[in-house]
Length: 250
Ligand code: ADP
Image (tube, rainbow, N blue to C red; front, top):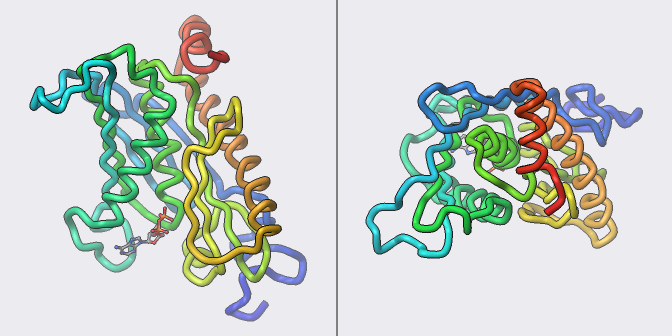
């Protein structure tokens, strides 16, 4: 395989994956003692820690919504998370990701249960290797579940993209850098409604349909891993309650 080819003649990608294979993913909840809910996700070479605080009264009070809670996400990449030291402090990219992740989570949290409050979600990217917004959102919804916040469902997320003219799931850094397109996606797993979709690059209409089909399938695989992470951290009795709050149809 020549250096600039991302997929070989057998359809195998540089890291040994097939087009529809996710990177290795591990997820844990309840990793921070002082947070109301937390999670830690390793997704390929990405390492992500999430802490959730709330629901708590929102200050200043004029920002409160008398009918529901607000979900505020803070996505932040550590300076040591990428190979060149990342400039510390806020950036337009972090602001954008915080906003789209907040919106995706707001679509599932049963916010009417907690009027006048705020739920803060801190997403800390410790190591980044592409796909951090998807992994961060996946981890954030797990941390909300760990905090016991009622939700209509979890939010699994995964990117799908185009490299060497082929549609593949879950681009790693090199594929993201020199690939043709990257399309982060997140869904409601019960309905397949899309709650996050962005696109960098170009696809034909046919490729886009194929990408959505593969992306939704990948999100369901991520959802299975989320459920597994929650299951392994709770007793059977907890899990019965949990199924009622987060996993049943509402
Ligand atoms: P995502 O991580 O969701 O794929 P991007 O496509 O914006 O988001 O970024 C792709 C990857 O580029 C990141 O995961 C990270 O590895 C790298 N990256 C992003 N921002 C920076 C930065 N400021 N400095 C160095 N690398 C960065």
